[in-house]
Length: 317
Image 1 (cartoon, rainbow, N blue to C red):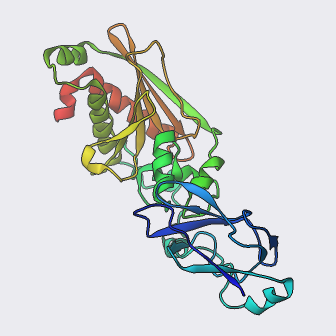
Image 2 (image 1 turned 180 degrees about the horizontal axis):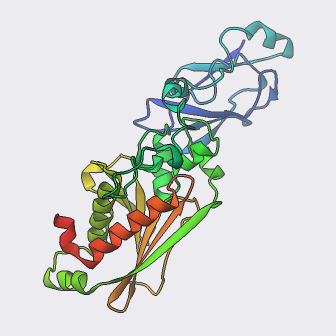
Image 3 (image 1 turned 135 degrees about the vertical axis):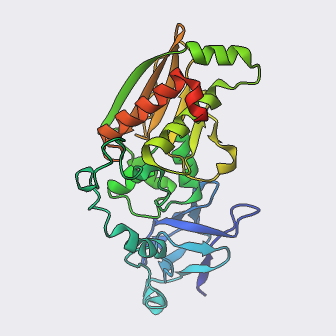
């Protein structure tokens, strides 16, 4: 009798999971304990093993599909001749996940908006017409992939530009590279900021840097909302502002002022601002990928951040 392969419940509050990859094809002979597919929830990615010996047949769900817990996704039959009996019950593959199809109209014009074709900025304010894709929030990715990308400083937009299909899953983050990574640095007088920190016991230096970065981003890119991921040295990560929890960050911030280190560049190629102390001054380093943040825009952004660090009152304007 055929054995039904169902989407397992891998967590107490889980009601569905995404099929990341089929590890066996229809017709393959399998044994109990063989991994047959890989699934991803908002907590983890793991392999699911066969619970019966036989031949895999009737794959009903394509890679990338979000499947409710308990749904039948394939069959295990006793003999190879039975595999054909389950063909055609449902397509084992589709050209692309539904989420990707829905996103196609938005992506169709994507190759066009190169910096050179953007409308020129007003002569009095040399600002780009739109923020880079890294903070646009239009990249389709699973909750786990978004969280891991934020923690690792990986730019999801650069993965999409590199050809990683959407929705991006945790397994796709391995394709992040450091190629094309650039850095800009600035040394800023910290007198005004240090005086502000000395006067207020409640002042949080890291969150002040985040406020400076967010204010600069809004000014340079004319954006109303921006999220900054605050990466702590213990590996944890929070966001600024706190109300933006769950939104994709525009850039990450690493505060190195309490260390002897000078800068940090993420291995995943994401956009990161690192801050370090140099006597009474501050060293600011912006690490970015020119594929998602062109050099002229990066110069404007770092210069605007440096201006706010040098004169904190700008943050109130």
